[in-house]
Each structure stands twice: as structure tokens, then as C-alpha cells.
Image (cartoon, rainbow, N blue to C red; front, top):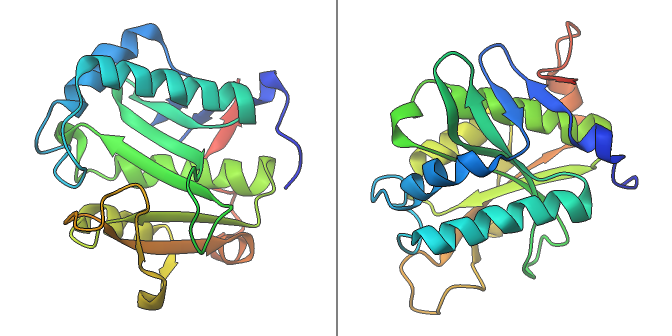
Length: 205
């Protein structure tokens, strides 16, 4: 992996045909807290989050940008909503058989599910990771019951092997959500999917 990009590069906007990935604003925090207080949005997570915990998470995501030069971007759908959730890249912060690794993840308000926004935004993030960051591989993971996220991973061209399912080390041994399914995508696999007409997502100012 090459060194983190310069601050001006890391702050670049990522654009898809319908989506904009950008750095966080203080005004995003209320909308993020609403997602974290929504039982539907959080059904595959250990529990709901208070506004204080949600704000603390937003601060950690911004700190990830400051420390690594990349992170989960705020997802804006221009003309429709200024903050629909977040999509982006994150260093895996626990030890597992596939770490060290960078994961791609997303968390959207349910109002924006099922319309392809997560997939489109994730394609932009993958392009950033494999071109500007030169990552050799990007992973993603969730519980087996999270069929929507698993479908996004599959649409992105990611691959899983049941033998790589793992028990999340940050959940108690008897927790019903402890089993996670791992998906991987290598840079070579991603490049092979490009059709020559331009990589999905353009980094721009």
C-alpha cells in the first residue's frame, strides 16, 4: 500500500451518476443519529445507539480520515437529500484471520434502500481504494441474515467462501450476531471487471 494521499487528495469528492461522497459536516450528525435510533436500520447490529454514541462514532470516522487519509464518506444524493448515510473505506480495527485489511462498508437510512445508491456509492469507494490508494484487496463482512448488504457485496463483484466465516471478536461468545460472513475483492479482480470505458466513480474537487 502506498502512503496516505495528501490532505487535498483525501478531501476530494467522489461522484457517481446519482451520488456524491464527501467529507463530513457537523450538520450531518442529527441525520446520522436518526439512522442509529431506527430499529429497521439497525436490525443487524447489536443495538440502537444514543445520540451521544452516534456523535462519538462520527468523530471517530473523521479521525480515521485525519490519521489514514481515507474513511467512510458522507453520502449525499444531490437534489434529494444532503445526508442519506455513509459509504466508504475503513481499516479493520480488530484481529481476525484476514487482518490487517481495509473494509468497505455502508449504512443508509431505510428511505434510501433498494434504489441502488449503496452499490453506486460503493463502486466509487472501490475505485478510490484500488486506484488512488493502490490497495491490493478490499474486504467486507456482515451477518448472514443481512441479505441486502450481502447482495450489494455480490453486485460489486466480491467473493465469499463459507470456510472464511468468522466469529466477530468484539461480540460475546453467545451473541446471536457473532457469526459474520466475509467477502473479498482483489485489485486484479476489480480491474478485470472494468469495461474499458472508465472506472466507476470519478475523484474530483
